[in-house]
Image 1 (cartoon, rainbow, N blue to C red):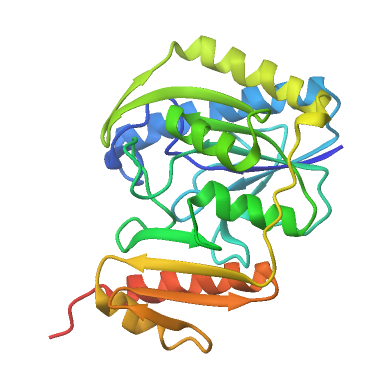
Image 2 (spheres, rainbow, N blue to C red; image 1 turned 60 degrees about the horizontal axis):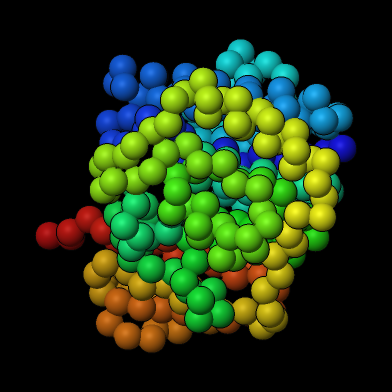
Length: 276
């Protein structure tokens, strides 16, 4: 069985502050080690359940955080730029996808909540429904008929997953967000055990898997922090201005809409600097 793991960092146990997310600090190194412990627990559960090919997509920041020395029993996708960003390789015929270490969508009262570009994106809607990285990425998996079998992250993320993927989805809570920069993290050894056992369970209970399909044509609406971010996005053909700081794109194929969204985020960040 072939499994893709899209692995983010903000939803990992004990991770609560931007210092832990940026390379160069001791707190970042510690966060990555905890991240790898969680991923190794998930991989161990998958192997015990019979997974034969496991690919982990490093889905955080510059996407050069983890490697095979840290996670020896999986193939690792590292580096940027990628056509499908956090979901690189999803079009390569996987049986199921795991979304791990995820966080809640932008605007949620939850630890480190955001959607792809925290500096510039305030909200994303998919066919008028607010979504975060989980929803956007699950829809991409669904286009390629890959079900989401397992998610992990903070409490709010797990609630978000149940709303999108159904109450049956196997979701492991690593912590409970108290504010944007604080959380109640559960005993780490217990979290590792839960991740391993529920990963194993997820592979066996296929009736709980969810292929998340979005209606075509699909519309992605992005609300930015400032009007100049929307100004930049109007450079993209077929992107329509909705309001001062909001744009949208409508298309028949979700992967194209998804990539257009990625381009919008990149342009908005590039335009974020004040030109004098």
